[in-house]
Image 1: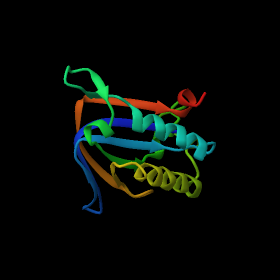
Image 2 (image 1 turned 90 degrees about the vertical axis):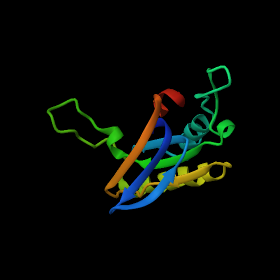
Image 3 (image 1 turned 120 degrees about the vertical axis):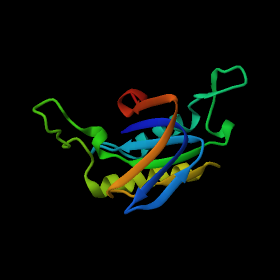
Image 4 (image 1 turned 30 degrees about the vertical axis):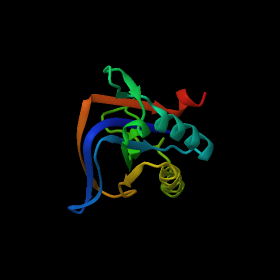
Length: 150
């Protein structure tokens, strides 16, 4: 599982020209799921995500979490995080999770994040989405379950 996390001032996602998710200060999280991922891995990734201390405190140090700054989450499925570009110029997505189990795990992640006191918005699994965001910093982090869960 991979989370590409962008610290944003605001962000939105559109499907067919309609805004379906919108947040203010917080994280846009692009979520890549592969065929070996499960809820145990998801729980560890969610815990790390919700407790990341990347927001500045009164001294300007990245010391505060989403909850500390009343941050919001925009969770977007992104199978292309598992693109394999080793051979040729056209990426292979063989390592991306199969649609049905990946969708179930994506929805599990959404439900788990909603159990926090944070505002959680989402994209639409499998849809053609247009994402707009203002990255604060820019500050982008990649969480990879191979590193987090080993």
